[in-house]
Image (cartoon, rainbow, N blue to C red):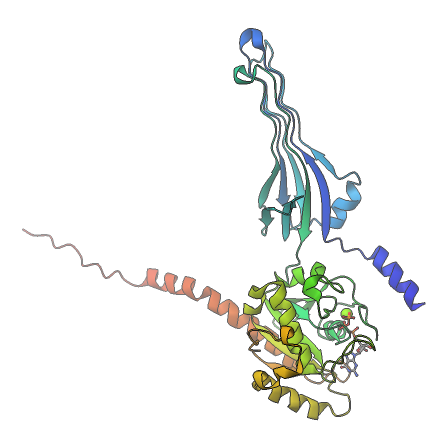
Amino acid sequence: MVNLSRICYRKYGNLVDNLRLYVRGGSGGMGLPRLGGQGGKGGDVWMVSKKEVTLKRIHDKYPHKRFVAGVGANSSVKGLKGEKGGDYELHVPVGITVTNDDGRVMGELNAEGDRVLVAKGGQGGSFHSAFTPSKGQTKHIRLDLKLIADIGLVGFPNAGKSSLLTVISHASPQIANYAFTTLRPEIGKVMYDDHKQISVADLPGLIEGAHLNKGMGHKFLKHVERTKQLLFVVDVCGFQLASKTPFRSAFEAVQLLTKELELYKEDLLSKPALLVVNKMDLPDAEHKLEELREQLENPEEFSHLLPHDMIPRTNLAFRDVVPVSTITGLGLDQLKRRLRGSLDEEAAKASEPLHRERLGALRPSRTPLPVWGP
Ligand SMILES: Nc1nc2c(ncn2[C@@H]2O[C@H](COP(=O)(O)OP(=O)(O)OP(=O)(O)O)[C@@H](O)[C@H]2O)c(=O)[nH]1
Ligand SMILES: [Mg+2]
């Protein structure tokens, strides 16, 4: 039964986070040799970001996934200069990276209204081309969606990420006692009394080797790239994926997760990070938490616990370590406060230069007033 529901979920889960499309610029119009007329240029194909669009909608609405711009008009006696063909603008969600088939990034669409030209129209026929028009560019392109959220949950499978999102937000992701319950990212909103909201992205669990695309791998690590801050979640009692894989304590889990992010993209580790130690209701949790705190204070001393190539080059300096239990509710209010505090702190830092500039502009000018002589 469990397996059946997982298959359905995989098949019908409605998050589409990448799409491959065929795009073609319009051909140019014919020139008119007799009168030296120039054919119109073919139209271009553009990707334009719009907030309300989803990749799922594009996927369903355009099953053929072909987008072709209009052809340029032929030059004629009535119109020697042929008209340009119509551009094709496809609306795509905000947060898209466009790459071509060779993997080259053609552009990013990070804000509403951003535009990327993906296929140019051909030139119209003219004197220089013996009045023969050229064809538009033809390409396969890939749209990759990276979720944009304030906080991204990072943890091994079964650490309780989805349970945590459920108890601090209004989201209701699937929760179960087996690895890889979460197969697609989900965003929950955490509400505060002053009506401020922060968004938290629940991501599928990472495993050792995620940077090499093991487990759910890259497909989901990419979503961490655009979250403002990281929230590591570990099970205080540690984790073992399968009987053949090694048991990892909470400290080792933190180190391994750090290493996976480092190997995927080291920049990710410059994001502010907090650590949640979950399942504090389990027996002996207090003692294990103390042990973890001690290990986090002197990580070098305990790094021999890991294979050499899995020791992170830099250890993350967590802004806070918050013990919680999603079952008893322990620590959840404190966690919500700390998340908010950490985001507010960063927002204040980011706006500081602007604030100073504005203050500077308000101060009276120090330039001496001109002295009008007799
Ligand atoms: N004892 C205890 N169990 C918990 C706690 N939080 C979560 N669990 C259990 O841990 C298991 C895994 O929880 P999930 O929330 O699905 O874990 P996850 O990190 O989202 O897992 P993946 O989606 O596989 O990455 C479930 O059986 C939960 O009931 C907790 O605070 N205490
Ligand atoms: Mg989950």
